[in-house]
Image 1: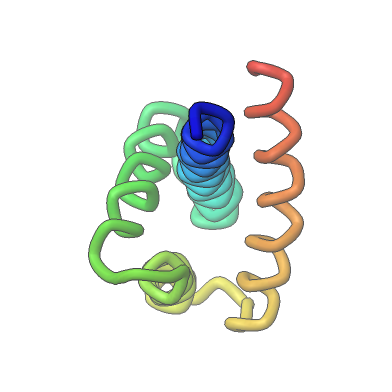
Image 2: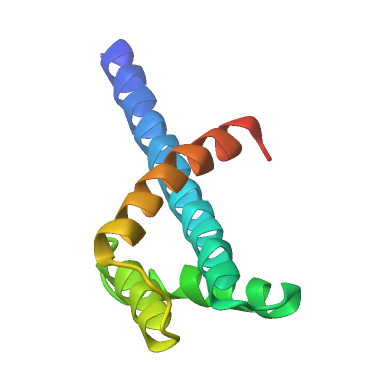
Length: 107
């Protein structure tokens, strides 16, 4: 019985670590996305950092990525930046891979 309990605890720990990794990678992706959008919006360094934090916080409004997509795309549209939801979504996907690597490497 002890072996079963140990295996169960091992699976629980792995699940916890996997969820923590996903959370960190998503937050990093959102920050990178915010910095990318800030560049398109013509923000200076301080404004870009503040905007990136706004993008990270926007992810807590609703489950999923739609809240982040809507924020960034809406802000780009409001400033007249030529973009589309597809381009922003594609960039989000690309940045998630980069963010996962950064979190994995401890950057």
